[in-house]
Figure 1 (cartoon, rainbow, N blue to C red):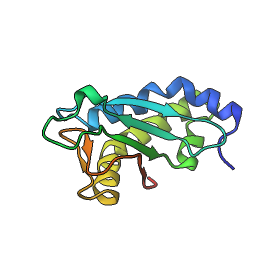
Figure 2 (cartoon, helix red, strand yellow; figure 1 turned 90 degrees about the horizontal axis):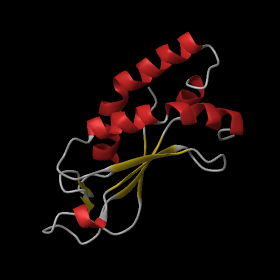
Figure 3 (tube, rainbow, N blue to C red; figure 1 turned 90 degrees about the vertical axis):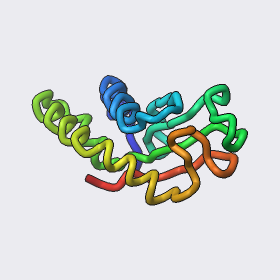
Length: 133
């Protein structure tokens, strides 16, 4: 089962944190747009895009559109009603997020994405799954 409406509502309040962590991890020349997708009928995750106007002129003509699936069990721990526990879980999630994000991109899409330029080697949406913490 994917996230329910109550879990989604709780995650909306912490959505800026993983988005900010993704921006930090992707400190390259491209101007990345990062949004969190938490629909109850889809795998939750982050959408990382580069607007077409930011794509490297020497690379392919299509900008990056990457979906990074986030582990459901980790997201569920972040919906805990106990604020102290949720804060501790959020800190633990954030501590390993950047390396896991870069590892997922580099491992699952080798030679498919030029992160500096924000362009893929082929048109379309690429998807990777963040490994479990």
